[in-house]
Length: 96
Image 1 (cartoon, one colour):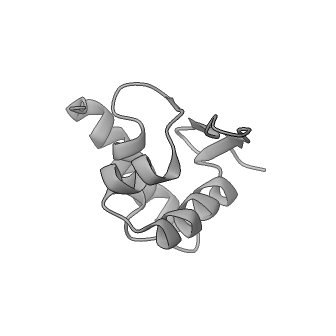
Image 2 (cartoon, helix red, strand yellow; image 1 turned 60 degrees about the vertical axis):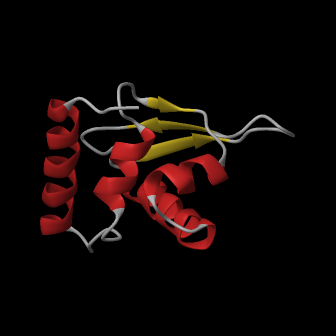
């Protein structure tokens, strides 16, 4: 799914701003957020689908998602069975 260029720019700016004031996010953070949220702030896709879209392997994807949740860029609602988890994007990141 194509991404809105303004959305890509907003994501990149938020990641750069976060990295300048905090321990850096994974270098693939902006790419992953862009792949997960091309047009809206909710992602309900399987980890395999997210990995394929974001160009990551499953292991690095899990670590990157965990780090983005810790940083406040994402919130996660667990799925159940065949229903994948729901990720919500927060720009700017939510401070805990």
